[in-house]
Image 1 (cartoon, rainbow, N blue to C red):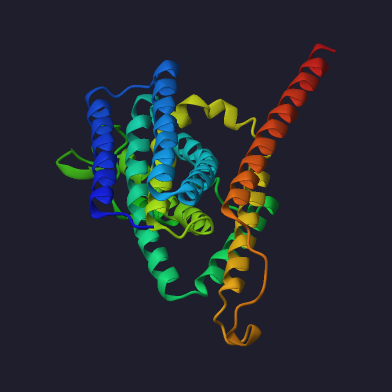
Image 2 (tube, rainbow, N blue to C red):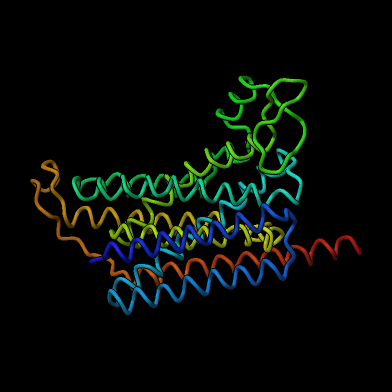
Length: 329
């Protein structure tokens, strides 16, 4: 895939411009967005992502277009799971609703920066170390097992970095929007928003460890990996306000995502075997294993997400009805 410097420049320029508009609008009037506002913004971002996918299809060919859509859907689904953690962080720190947009926007900017770094590192590793796909595949299978069978400490918003900041710095109890440091009694104090941003930032690093190997299992093109992440993150703030309550009804989301990560992990291992250079596996020669086409991967991703959503909503509705019947009885 030959992506020109101009194409990269336009992509980065548009991304930065959209973020700047968001920053200026939110900074001027901190507020809790209405359902109409979030719906329109989310529709805009999803529509923009679909148009971009068809642009990639037209500009770089069908295979690259399919890779983008598969990567975007995967990153979006993983981002939805991340919303649970955002909700926990906001609740743990008692962030006022009118300031939550600001906190989320900063978190998304940090996520873009961290993921950009991880994408560059991942692309360099894949270019020079073919066996890294074994590592990525094994890590995704491990992550899938952890999601399916528990063992996460995701309910703890007070991670080690936040606890260190609490011990090291003088803290303020007052909220001052995005102001991170204030003067109280003639001394500098760190605001609660600073801790929220630290929590979001350090959590974003952990998110990237899952999502970047996953998308490299669908495409090796850094441009597609980056843009899929950009479009998945851009609508995340609106999604937080729009479906916060709906998330509680997606009771099987972790199982669906576990299956998704397991599938991509297996795909990565198969690709690693197909291009094997490790001397202790088949004498350093490629192993004749089947490969999974990207179009098949896209179909599997859509099927997993659709079945997970339908079964979760059906199960939640059924139990809500049963609970209501028992209450009436």
